[in-house]
Amino acid sequence: MFEYKINFQKEKSVVDKITAGLGWDVNNGASPHQFECGASVFILGENGKLLSDDYFVFYNNKPSPDGAVVHQGNNRTGEREGDDETVNIMLSKLNPQATQIVFAITIDHTEERRQDFGMIQNSFARIYNAATGEALCRYILEEKFQDSNALIIGRFYKSEEQLIFEAYGLACNDGFGRFISSCYAV
Image (tube, helix red, strand yellow):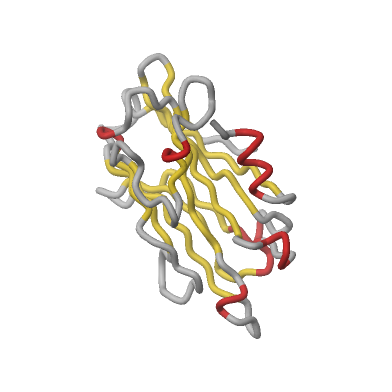
């Protein structure tokens, strides 16, 4: 596990707007509709579980109930430059009961299609300060996670009333659904 911690109270100026971005291109010869990557966010409480099902933000549940996390829509092909999908986070709006914001990247329908990040070109995931563009973490998915189909890329968590960012690559390769239900379900 790779960790990169930032204590925003001590080490950085105040950061309020964060963006999680995901980009990819389909390998040569493959149909753009054969691969579909997705970005999602889990907003967890003190028990390490979702505050409610509505606090799992993804392309079918775009805003969190508190308005702090908003998914900007689903790109099914990866056919544009830069971030193909983004999730915007405004930390000042976060529900006070939230103790963690976890960022995940998946390949949809991966179990039936038997796909992994190694099958996609130019795939990356990143989390950055939306105001400055400063990267908090960035992963090249097809290189480091070529046998994986789901990945937790990082999280914000509260520690003694301070917000800390931790980047890590927790890879899954047996289906994201099982991972969600065992780790984050209400």
